[in-house]
Image 1 (cartoon, helix red, strand yellow):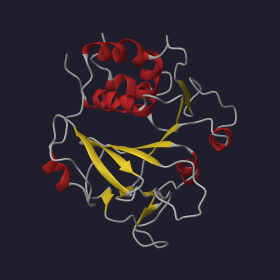
Image 2: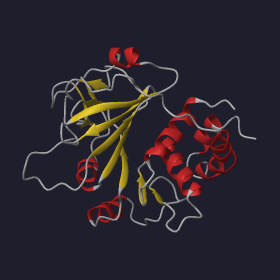
Image 3: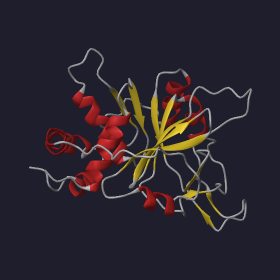
Image 4: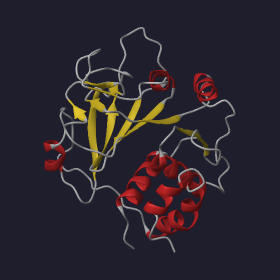
Length: 246
């Protein structure tokens, strides 16, 4: 059974969520949201099924006060996995959500950091998700640090970067070395393409495994069940991503 890129990325993220107990998903995050819902469905018969909190919309959103309740929950240690993206991401896992160019006279400005710094420092496992894999995004050094991937000694920090998922690969972050390590390459890519499109140095084994693709059972679950659930929050995404649904 063939899969599309959205289904591959959902499946990749779902595999990274194994072992999580409470996953929170921020605004405008249909692929991470779909992955969390997929794992919740796959663990529904377990003693402790995955708890999913989605901020966008009303479906699967347990919060009545939006971001403030989310931050309280994270600060109390009741969220173990969260997602962040960035206009720029560098090799130390620093994230830029403010803009490009020299601050404060930036060439382009974006929505801003919101609570990214707090969540990055509080949530034990943060998955950085940015489909675009180019040197424009994966830069040697971000123009502005919205959320730091590493902190100086003495800074209280419970959380930080766990993995980076792009349209080409999966990298895990080595907190001891403060570097990314390439852990799998998607079937349509190769290490040469990844090196050519990454602005920072990263570690990798001599033989990099291929990313595990979704099997038929997972694809059917995505198309028949998860497509309907994620459509409650992201109807257009569900229609486009799961057009092969039967």
